[in-house]
Length: 251
Ligand SMILES: Nc1ncnc2c1ncn2[C@@H]1O[C@H](COP(=O)(O)OP(=O)(O)OP(=O)(O)O)[C@@H](O)[C@H]1O
Image (cartoon, rainbow, N blue to C red; front, side, top):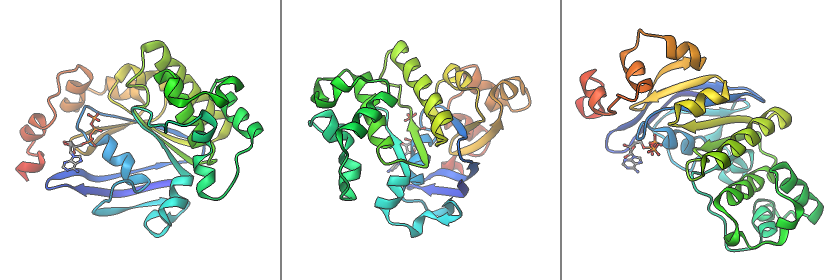
């Protein structure tokens, strides 16, 4: 469904280097990497929030560069590290996407979306700014689901939440991914979280995929020194790339 081939991004220096992967319908891919490794940039390229310099992103074999940004963002939704809701009622926030297509989101559909993200219908008329961050993140997810997306991009959506709220969102995403068959790319720097997903995992370090597979297998792989240092919390991004002669500035 989502195919990424040789995606490269340069912002004065290389940020992403020939990143390639596929995510099928209903599949989940975890992108794991340290801070600054290019995870957010990667996600932002997938729905054209950021431009890329090389490579191609295809959705159902169509080059996303050829589709309108509005249509693409309906099909490829994104949830960010911190929810960015408007100071409106919850229902008005959830209705924003459909309203861009001149569609009306009725109360029943809004309540059904709230139910999908584990919020009661009483939340429909709450002011978004009065919600907890965890509740706001659920509303942000309902906002994405209101567009009936084919792909969900999750950019560390639990990083602003306490451990209990984070686990709740993780479980919610697992259920939505499974029940609605929405292809999901979940970005994280958190190894235990990646392990909890038990999904195919791609490790991104200094803009390059250095490993892709089952996380338990990757953790057992003693061949790649940078991978081991990352799993042991000893990796220094940039510095380690320099040592490998791979740092962008060393090229
Ligand atoms: N517009 C830009 N101009 C210059 N450098 C940029 C730009 N956007 C991102 N970068 C750099 O690209 C690298 C990757 O950034 P990115 O935000 O994608 O990493 P990340 O893995 O998501 O990090 P974090 O987990 O800390 O959010 C960083 O070194 C960042 O400073």
